[in-house]
Image (cartoon, rainbow, N blue to C red; front, side):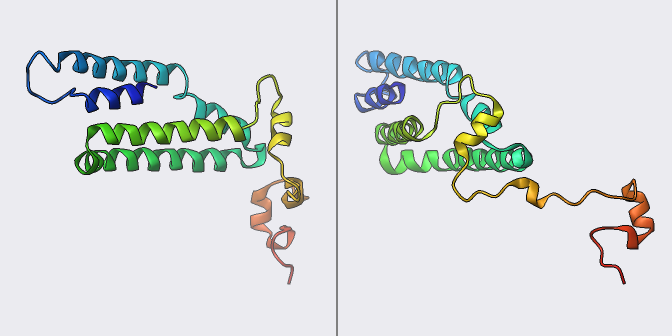
Length: 167
């Protein structure tokens, strides 16, 4: 809603630089919309991806999953930052913020329709929510337990390593 208000303020004359008394009200609306967006984003969505990422990945791949999600987040942050001024120059301020509001509304709709509620569930219950038919049990890919007592003794005696062929 704040991005839509910001787009409306720019559409109606905010930031026109005329300095006249006619644009002052729209400038105040634009400033209020920016402050409202920052406040509401900080209270809600800013922490959302970090909470969801810590819940949706099973334990055996949580580190890799959170790393991939964090990298994706930063790539898209960079894409938005690098394209913003080009969008403003090509579409104008109002259309750019209408576009960003549309992207935000699409993301909110997707989240509402697709992402399951995890409140009050254990990590194991959350893992079951995201399990698909045909998913493989991660225990099948665990290396066999070492019978030598330590990795160092396996390195010193290659024949004792379960991962190396015995010749």
